[in-house]
Length: 212
Length: 206
Image 1 (cartoon, rainbow over the protein chains, first blue to last red):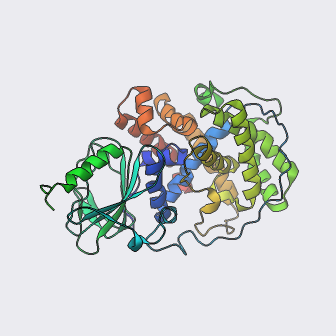
Image 2: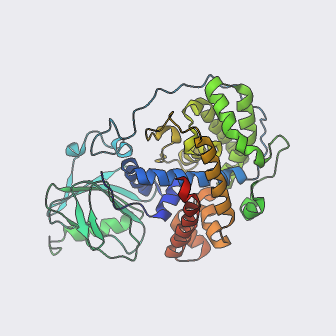
Image 3: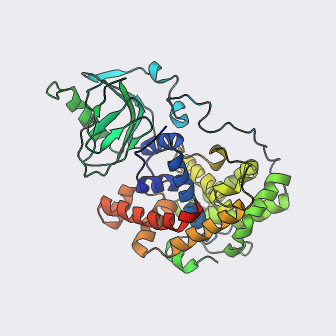
């Protein structure tokens, strides 16, 4: 898998710090599961967390001794991270879906556009989006963070072409109009920090004037 | 040695120091303790880890809004998780502090935010290197950590502030922007620059 669009450094830092909203974290984790480069970045950023933790002034414990723990659990050696998982579904996402992408129960949004909402805590929203070739993905930008990870097919916009494993983590100020490429339907995992805004986009999509 | 002055502003909310805690400078030896726990279920080594990191994890949890009792319970649980999973520890994923940070972070997301932690713990990250480390990997890792500390302590205050608010208070970009009264883009660019400096310091060790 050759991934060319990665998570923004500020997103990576917030993710490693445990400060990224849950919906965005789901997409960040799914991308990292597909992307060795971003896994390395997260590992580096966790060292920052280790350094900050080690430098904290200690708060005295009431219990100075640990309670006697049971014997450590010896590891069953796991398979390589990317082996054994579904080709299309990164492991973090697999736990939210009962089957593969073909088993998803899609709801039609408009001509050539379907969505499926996924459960996630917090104020944001998490969706699977399916767009037929030539279809326009709901537009990013304007307010609140949004992450889009390609799981099948590809799309392109002014910032480039996004293939499987690529994530669009674009500055809010960038306006762009992603269009699904010819080939299989483009399926993306999309997280938005502001679900109301996303619903607004969906409503707009459903209007016939939104030419596809 | 760690530059405490560099972090002092970040520490204003945490209780100070127990006499049973070890000086932070001894933390370099902690990876060895973790190995002793992993290889021989060494309870003496575990007690030392507990007494060094328990109070720091407690401080971390309190910084994130937990009351002292809850923070103590979460610190205890974090260290028990360290004990249980010590056999997964490999030196290339960061030192003991990094390992313990990741466990504490996920426990905090689970218990204090009541959300599913999406971040994988180091034992789940297998890039095919586990168990086959270069003999000098432990030393290289020690050097990486020293450089991370050096880079952190050289950050200007406005960059250190956004890093600290992320890691120690769990604030999102938007929350930090609101707190500091600066545009979202400013928060993100400060974080990017901070990370670029940290990464630049590690360039030849990656």
